[in-house]
Length: 142
Image (cartoon, rainbow, N blue to C red):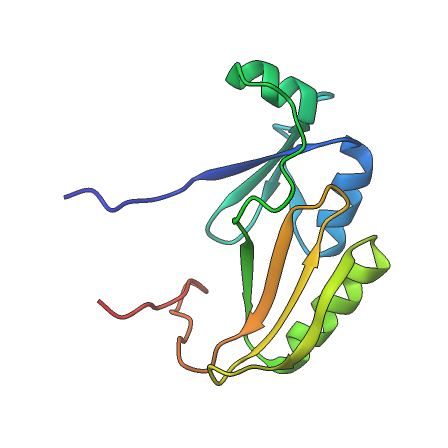
């Protein structure tokens, strides 16, 4: 049986260089597979691609129109509250729009929300109930 997976999340961006700098400030590493029109960023268990917003819409054969809140967020699970604080500060310094500063939350963790320079919403959180495995991936229970 094949496990479900996501290999790459592609974000449509308005300024490729600005977005690359933003994600590199959060610890993503650009791949040598990157080209003038697309940047591939390596994470520990998933990759991000940054692609011009208009070009991405054209490639998908959809209209490029603002969507407002798309009811989708991305999450970075940190190993500690201190890591959340550090990443949130790095994101703000690199141009993030802060929505919710790091704080203790109702479910027992520590969480924050911000948007990248193109409005893609990210949660940076520490969840003490879900550990990491030996490879640094979330060890979700079966």
